[in-house]
Image 1 (spheres, one colour):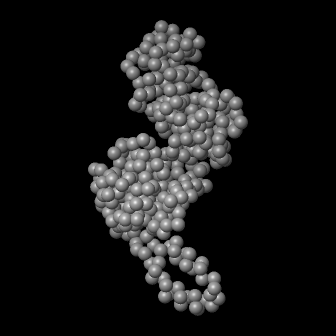
Image 2: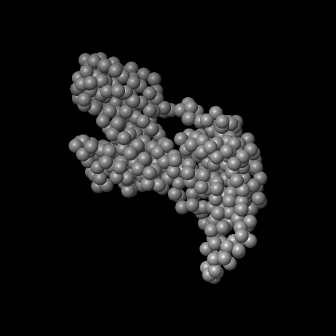
Image 3: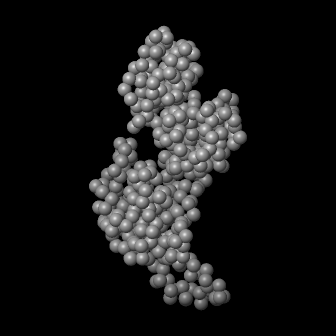
Length: 392
């Protein structure tokens, strides 16, 4: 019986993925094999010795102490793309709100409570509507910074709306490149993208390399009057730099999902209450994906969409036992483990080894249950972090 401890409100659709005969799931589970969470901050919380994996129902994992968990052999999953459509649609709404006089127009209409006659109201609206006309996004250029699951969908949406799209992503993966439309013009650097774009939408992760990616130096390259949209993470943008560039007229508007006190009351800032992924459909998609990934890892040792360990998945050979182990990515570890198995008369049927930066992960299928001595010898191997044995 696997045990999964939940934090936050996890969608019922996700929780229903766990078969009751195999899983015990709840918020007060002791000795859990896995955590399933949304925004719960794990920094400072006690780490159960039984913990094998953490699944974040969402893309960002800044609430998980990844470096510490990696050293313990705990695999951390996220759900890239599960909330992509929700964010994509809000980006479109942000562009339209920044372009047309929708918000001031709504406020103006609601201010006319003193008018009781419909004809009089209609006449006044005809007179004043030019104040809220705005422009159109068709034919304008959108710059997409970060061309992953969300960024590529935003690019496709903009192309469908008749916009030109330029993109920049120094870490573009092969999978992301296949998803990307060939109508998107790739920029060599951020400055080139900013100089060409009427709108700039940010879709990069919150890591050290992207902290305050948008700052005074970057915005110096910005096309005058451009609209900046941030539905990624607050740390990507230096808020004071944005406000300075709005005051100078270099930026036309800032649309974001991360309000700060200094931004309130400004007509050139449209700030939303962090609702980018907050749709019923998005929360369900994230929970289902997170649950599926946890089950595949706990039952088979397969890793899909981990943020700290390499992706590795191998079909189960019928009636075989499976050994998995995480290790430091240094030479000789796998060879030593295979020698241990040979010495213990354990026959290997199939195997797979993958590495990612400083970490590696291995799956080895063997004919029979490995002895306690064999498992202990693998655990004692230098640079091996964690070992599991999974029964057929």
